Image (cartoon, helix red, strand yellow):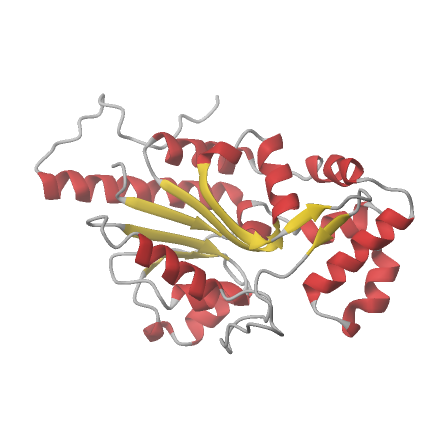
Length: 265
């Protein structure tokens, strides 16, 4: 199935059950300051201000990393990512979090090398040892112009760029998994052979079912990590069977094509 399926994950509340920004704010004692400043600046700028506060308190990037490593990730989601990678899927992340948070969590769980690309807000540690978080799009100098997306990132533009780069890959099919309002724009870019997997009762799910006719892709909803993992692997199996049918191959039960992991006793 190599090159046939591209799996695109949102990160917060999708690949991980919670929100990495909120986790750091809560676990590192920044809740009060965060609430005071919440209405005064964009989210990415607010998170960068939280990093300034942590640096002022003497907290290093390593302390933030240790906090992130304690964030839970559903074991079935971990296994589904590894299974998808083993089966040749092109795995990517498009997220409104930031590179430091995402890469720290993925590396801790041994998943970073499974992903071809992570598109998110840049983050870097400066010469003074402070973690800096900056917007993916420069909303002042080069706004993306999409009314559906927040000023710092249009995920739809990112997906269009990926699709254009993949245009020479025959029969490429996309699986998009997400939960938030920012995930709606890329879902509008999916075709009839693609799949969208929204988290039930979350903003993306509500937007999709507000007018389902705007979505061309096949819709599969999910509620928790176990359900997300099962749905993802079922979709990959379907794509694999469709590809085998198209190419005239037959997948036998013993040829290793089935992606679904064996449940623990």
